[in-house]
Length: 498
Figure 1: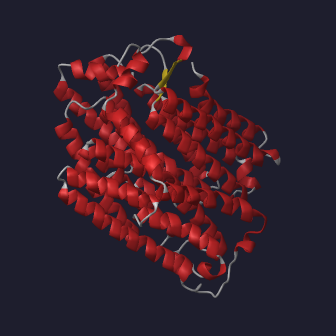
Figure 2: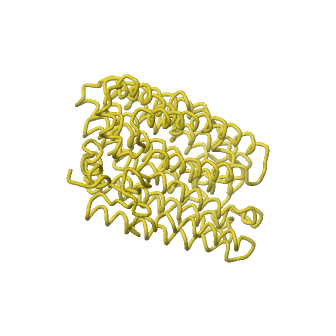
Figure 3: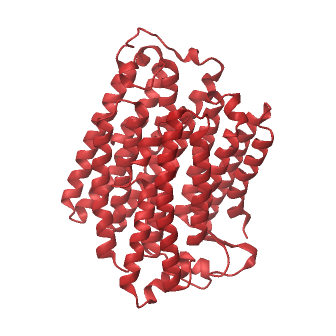
């Protein structure tokens, strides 16, 4: 078992144990920061190793695949693990200023690290049953973070979140059982050949629908998205930020992994459904955002809209479309985390999360206003920010595939997103505060640095991707090539040559 694979998994769980043991001391605040920094280093080493040597595989206990537990990292897995670690570090630093002693005593930092470990495990696992296990780790940890504090709104949001996610889990587990009954294996690389060789192709298409519904609900795709805007606005802003950046992306990752590696036997049916779901998800998300006034509800519906763009690449299913969606995925994670963290800081300064009750920050806290504007414009696809290149790649892929209607939908949704984010920024930052308050960053006191540094760091990542898109486009092309031709992945897991 390669330590390159195990270290990004071991670090967050070891950090969680230490953070819980020292949760009532001053060290309990800084242990998660140190652990998250080590997690970034371990994830960067894994990414560099995969980039240099190709698909990296480890077999637990030296049991050969498909009989044992497999960990595998290709380019997509490695970049997602790295983005998870970076987002986790930013949120951990931000939480130093947001989370007080009471939430720390209840285990906020420890549970947060467990969540990061669960997300990392989902990206690295090589078999479907262990993907289910990591989903359960994520569900338990996310539920714990949602209810910390015990406010009525939190409990209400957590109940909706868990109820619908349990339905998704039941669908996922049912699909796993049916798939194992047909193929006799759950190793994803082994399923590649088993599904292709099975004479029961019609039944396999039905089973694929189980996975599409389960992962679609996890990703908050249309029409299974109601749990997300009902819950993401209730916990601490650091929790909302990590949820926004990562949780729905695990569902998208699972769709990409299963519907390129396993369920490619009926593309004309399964991917056509994904294609139309993409358009409906984009439209529903942006219209929902335009109807909201609470800042986190607006951003939550924008998460849903973004999921539509990610599904579009899988629905079109061409190398250019998949590469465009992967670029969108890489850009979207730091953008979403930045927006939620900046929104939390704005809430603390103005005293409200309702945009009609906010305002004045552009004059009194211009730096924060600019830091919010950068990811907001990037989300809308404003050139030359990262979101512009992502949407250009997807629209061009749609036109090349003669999906003219969907290209028009993507452009229209981009314009509506710009309208939504411009309205949000004008209400929350540009107009005068309705109570003539004049909040400044100095009002954050000793938490000013821990609040602003992670926001500024992620905003710089967004700017860097937008101003220098070449390396990310090349990376996205490489990921798309591996997804659409997984021979190297299968050979690395099962042994042999591609």
